[in-house]
Length: 185
Ligand code: IMP
Ligand code: MG
Figure 1 (cartoon, rainbow, N blue to C red):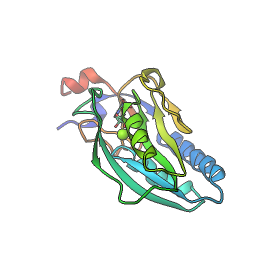
Figure 2: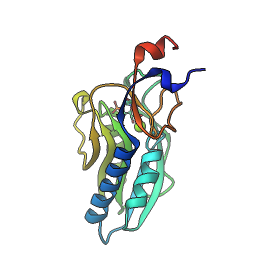
Figure 3: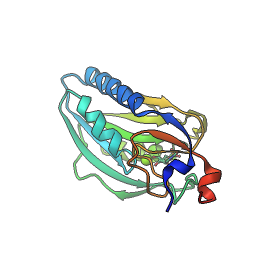
Figure 4: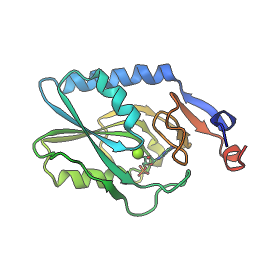
């Protein structure tokens, strides 16, 4: 059984930095949506921790819903081909101010599919809030209204982001030392 301490290459974003930035994003969103109702759509599973922290700093009315999307296989490999909806929303988004809450945008393929699909349901507005943005990896252009941090092209984990489904519970964002992880050290 591996303990994550053995394969953290570095702590990229400390818990305190995350807290500060998430609060700032919540305040920006609150200002922009003043007097409106928000429907925050969390992309499962990586966006969960970010969503629950973010909405604590949102002052306009906010409802939440969840969408499951499968893009990556196990481990750290990047997505190939089609994105699959594994869990759909339970609420109608027609006429609503939808804010997609995502953990990380890498190639952009996942979110491009989600946005395309949600646009067909006629929301009043549709914006994206991502905690992390691996901008250098982008393959499709995504309009990002709110972004926590632009990060380098490294595989990260913690604060909702997984490695083989584990380590989502870490309160910080770490970079994997892939050699150690794959060697099982
Ligand atoms: P995209 O379709 O390439 O933009 O991939 C986006 C999805 O891949 C994210 O929502 C994450 O679930 C996953 N992902 C991308 N990079 C990482 C990473 O560094 N760590 C963990 N998950 C990642
Ligand atoms: Mg995700």
